[in-house]
Image (cartoon, rainbow, N blue to C red):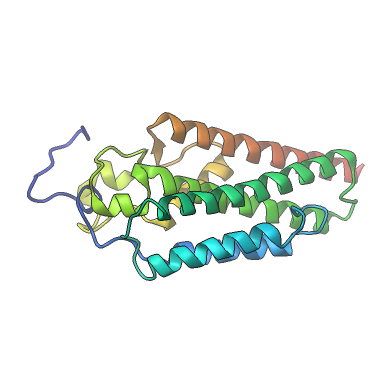
Length: 228
């Protein structure tokens, strides 16, 4: 399946049951996401501006109570809650992105370059975090499912999977890996070292790259127009 021999008695960590990844990295990312949403200018934020961040925070508290240190516990309720959190964050990001694009096109954001860049950067960073959460939540069924090791078919092919001799024996993808994947996909507009395998992964990366490309193009066009 993977193009190399796997010793059933010495499976790499990402193929077997593990103790689960630490909660801290994704907690920091969600806190940063909520902070960015709250700091978003009024004309870019979903209204009422505290509604979606409050819902995200409430859901995350429940998830944190269920898996406070390491993400291993699965249930019929936790999975939908995790997906709901990312869906709510996606709504906020899509709204801000649409408002930003509209403002760049009609000039409603003003001509102050620093202010425009800061607004665009805030939307861009939320896009990176939200996409990383989607990748993290869906790859092989999510973090808890990956910790159980029951699904051997990855949605993303990380370099450590094809070259296990270069990875530590306990390596498995964690949120930081998906954040890096999201960041590089947003900046390079294409996969870099990690390849999407499933159709949903390919389409999600396509949408993320396209949205980032449109945003960058609009910011550049606005900057050129301001210099004229």
